[in-house]
Image 1 (cartoon, each protein chain N blue to C red):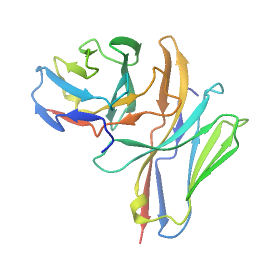
Image 2: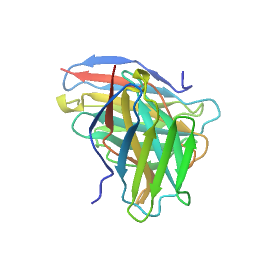
Image 3: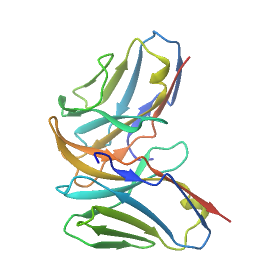
Image 4: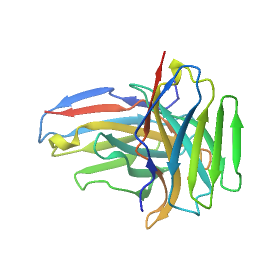
Length: 114
Length: 113
């Protein structure tokens, strides 16, 4: 157990729907990062939050949004889902806003859009 | 190029050494990392190397860094079946949004009995 908790582990939904993925960072970590892992795109950085504020943004679609709550858990919202959104979504956390000692990853949420 | 590059597949026999190679792009990266992803799991930080080091050894793992060629390698001695996984190298890179990790595509290591 890495200490980063992601729920649900698996999610199957239909095109056009909206889902919310949840991440609880490791105790003491202020930064949360979201990544998408798909077969054709590899591991893509989506967005980072640090202590409730958006800090960095990567290749995140406008249909996707995220937030970090006062208790530091984070949610990734995916809307108007398309077949191509099927992927593993990982959350990672780190102690500080930077990551010189590496991230700790959760075990991911596998999203299947049918 | 702009991408962190790795060969996609590597097969070795149990007990042999494995060498996984990576070419990165940002010479200003302070740290370079190796992550391991086992089936159905997230990425686990294996080791990292500070950019002013040439080599780092940690039990069966040896990381070599050639800054001139921007080449990073991970050697696993006495490879075991439990080492079968996908190995990602990663660099830190600064862009318009700040600093970020950039991962390679991953090398799938298969250990044959």
